[in-house]
Length: 162
Ligand SMILES: Nc1nc2c(ncn2[C@@H]2O[C@H](COP(=O)(O)OP(=O)(O)OP(=O)(O)O)[C@@H](O)[C@H]2O)c(=O)[nH]1
Ligand SMILES: [Mg+2]
Image 1 (cartoon, rainbow, N blue to C red):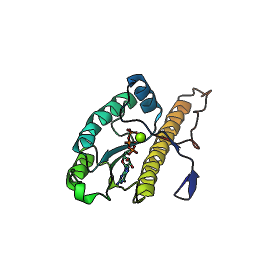
Image 2: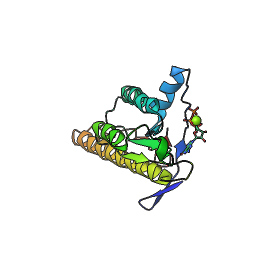
Image 3: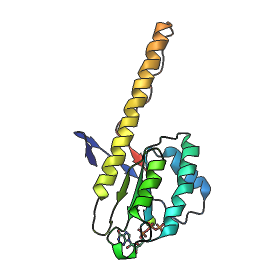
Image 4: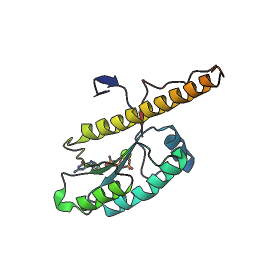
């Protein structure tokens, strides 16, 4: 549960395994997810490289270049073992449509809440945009005197993060 802009939001969080065997499973969670944390270890260059493919897959499956996403470099407490320069990770996140980049330490709990808060904000902003577009569409339909039978199913209290 996070408090975003004065509202209590329930997050549905799915932690995926790095060594996922079944790509069908991966496609399913990518389809369901509204927001994504792409996490690598700042001590492991390979984990950083792997983000590219994940992002491409997410964009393909969501069919959306601007899907809510945060790039996360974890293990910031292990500065002595750093393999991925902060600037490099920041640059990558920027090149993906100015996505935010955070460095976290799950061990010390540094920046962890901030990451979830940022992603929740992105998801909410996207929801609002979709609602506004839907209403605009409805107005246009009404003007052309076609009554709408179905109301859009809203997803206000669910907020899946993968
Ligand atoms: N020092 C430090 N160690 C961490 C941190 N986060 C995770 N670890 C350690 O890194 C190792 C791997 O952590 P996991 O949480 O299993 O990593 P994962 O990406 O979920 O791995 P899979 O689920 O197997 O894909 C464990 O030994 C953790 O204790 C951190 O912020 N700092
Ligand atoms: Mg894990």
